[in-house]
Every structure is written in structure tokens, then in C-alpha cells.
Length: 365
Ligand code: NAD
Ligand code: DAU
Image 1: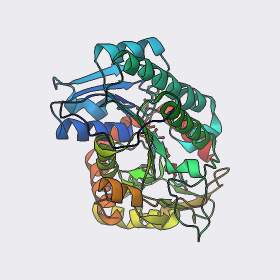
Image 2 (image 1 turned 135 degrees about the vertical axis):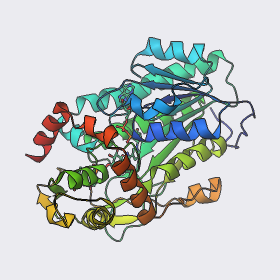
Image 3 (image 1 turned 180 degrees about the vertical axis):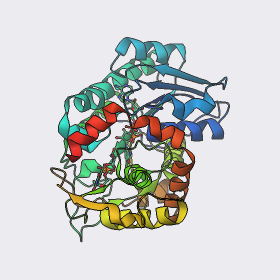
């Protein structure tokens, strides 16, 4: 079966969008972005509120007439069917996932369940819903994925493009690769208007404390060791989360079904250099640090198994076809992020729960 790859302009009618994982880090930033930009759109968040989900991330939106939060699992087919139908959803923005590589090494089961089976459940439910509604032109299924599916780059390799072969190296990235393949197959088999985005490392507000940037900021404030895996020479391409949300907005409005778009920050930095930058900024911005200068806290620890050496994104296609480029520099983005964490102790302190401490001991013991 062949489907036209022509860009189909979406109608000017307000969207009715289901955001899965909307209480997580990127999902909640995206929901804030969308509610601000498109106040006439209906926004329904479906989130299981796992350890990484936090309803407080959406507190300011709870009173809005066009906003609804539903606590539930994307693997629950009956719930997903019901929501798509009763809310007459035309667009799915699918963020829900288990997202932390270290946790996927400790216990991959949840990654297969949510990332593979959950994505399958959503695709299957949305396909039936879309077919029942006579395949509306404005329907979209945005599958939010990661650059980790492409594996690891050598120092002189060209950054990942949309045609780089998949080579995932962790249970997390393998589960995301599986879900990407399902999203692709649903276009080619059924014509479902799926679009995939593969993005580099995000940072910014509402980032759960276990990831490198918030972990570094919080540990500096607490005077705790800053664990650097291996030799600290691994490279990531950092993107401010607000820039990612603008990219996803452009993909939903102007992206072509069946296409993949790579999204990246054009900010390749070695982990050790990033942590030094964060320490410098923390020394400047945070008063009365328990250990000063905070660089003294840097500690090299045992490497992550299968640790990918380098990620980098070539986002030329997003620039030329969607008109998107990142707006934040790394320095400005990190400054804003640190200022947010300094002003929102009440957000992150409760997340350092007993459960979090147990996880922390397991990874860093
Ligand atoms: P996150 O871990 O902060 O949030 C995930 C959210 O999904 C949480 O709110 C959680 O409660 C929810 N969730 C988990 N399992 C669920 C289930 N079975 N049913 C319903 N909800 C469930 O993740 P994130 O960092 O915001 O990442 C969001 C998406 O973006 C993921 O798909 C991830 O693979 C992708 N991504 C993340 C990054 C990054 O740097 N964080 C970069 C590229 C792509
Ligand atoms: O590239 C996109 C991916 O970025 C997303 O798909 C993932 O969901 C997201 O978690 C992120 O994965 P990383 O593994 O790159 O992010 P993390 O913050 O866990 O680690 C960033 C780098 O820092 C990585 O090279 C491992 C290293 N690191 C991490 C932690 C938590 C350390 O050196 N010490 C640490 O304590």
C-alpha cells in the first residue's frame, strides 16, 4: 500500500491532544508550552505517576477549563480506548516511558513493558479510533524518542542523521528502538500518520534528580560527592527543554507523517567539562555552599556498563524542513536551570525520598 508523503496542512480547528507522560520532565514542559501557546486546544494528560511522574509539575494548569489530568497506565487498553473516544482526540504526543539508562540496567522489565508494550497499546488503540472516525486528515501520532537508538559515535564520526542505522546498547535504548519500529510500521502497514522524533539530552526545569545535571546541582547544594562515571570523557549533546518543546510543536504542525526528525542542541560537551561548568555556575549563583569551591566534590566512580561514548545530532532536516533551531546557548540554559533549582527547593527536596536513597545506594555503592 502506498501513502502520499505530501505535507498535509492541519486544519485551523483547535486540537484535541492526548499527552502521555505529561507529568514527567519533558512531558510537563511540553504541556506548559502547549497550554500557553494554544489556549483553545483541549489538553488531556495520561500519566501513571511512576517515581518519575509528579502532578505538582502541572499544578498551575489544574484549574484551566481545557486541561484534564488522568492518572493511568498506557498499557491499559480499555482506559486508552475510552479516553480517545470520550475526548475525541485527534493528536497523540507520546512521551510516557521509563527513561533512565541506569535503572534499565538494574531492572529492564519495566522498560519493555512501558516502552514497547505501552507504545504498542497506544498505537493499536489510536489506529482503531482513527479508523472509526474515517481517518481524519488532521490526525497525528507523535512518537517522542531518543538519539540513544543510534548507539555510540567515535570521535571523528559525523553526528547522527535520520538515516543512521539503529544500534542500541542499553535495555533502555533497545526498548525505545523497538517502540520506534512499531511507530514506523503503523504508518507503512495501516497508513496511521505517525511521526518520530529522536532527540539528544535535555535539561531544564522539572528534571528528576537522578539525571546528571540536576543530580550535580542538588549534590553541590547538599555538599555530597559528584559522581562521574569512568574517565568522564563521554560526550552528550545538550538541549534546553524549552527548545525541544518548540521543535515538537513544529513537528506536530508542519511535520510530515512517516518522517523522522532528529532534534539536538549542537552542544557537544564531555561530562567532566559539563560538571566543571555547573560547579563554576553554582559557586557564583548559590550562596553559602557547604563545600567551596564545589569542584572539590568531583569523584570518579565505576563506569556505567555499556556506557555509550559519544552522542551528537545533525539537526539539519529540522532546520531546513521545519524552520526550527535551538535558541538557548548552553551557558544561558544552564544558568536558567540552576536558578530554577535554587528557587524550587520545595519541588526537589521531597523527591529525595527513602525510595530514591535506596536507588542511589544501589547505583553508587
Ligand atoms: P521522565 O522519566 O521524566 O517521565 C516519564 C513520564 O512517563 C513520567 O511522568 C511517568 O510517570 C510516565 N510513565 C511511565 N510509565 C508510564 C506508563 N506505563 N503509563 C503512563 N505513564 C507512564 O522522562 P523524560 O525525560 O521526560 O522523557 C520523556 C520522553 O522523551 C521519553 O519517551 C524519553 O525516552 C524521551 N527522551 C528523553 C530525553 C531526555 O534527555 N530526558 C531525550 C530524548 C528523548
Ligand atoms: O540522549 C538522550 C537520553 O539522555 C535520553 O534518551 C534519556 O532518557 C536521558 O536520561 C539521557 O540519557 P543519559 O544516560 O545520557 O543521561 P544521564 O543524565 O543519566 O547521563 C548523562 C551522562 O552523564 C552519561 O554519559 C552518564 C553520565 N553520568 C550520569 C550520572 C547520573 C555520570 O557520569 N554520573 C552520574 O551520576
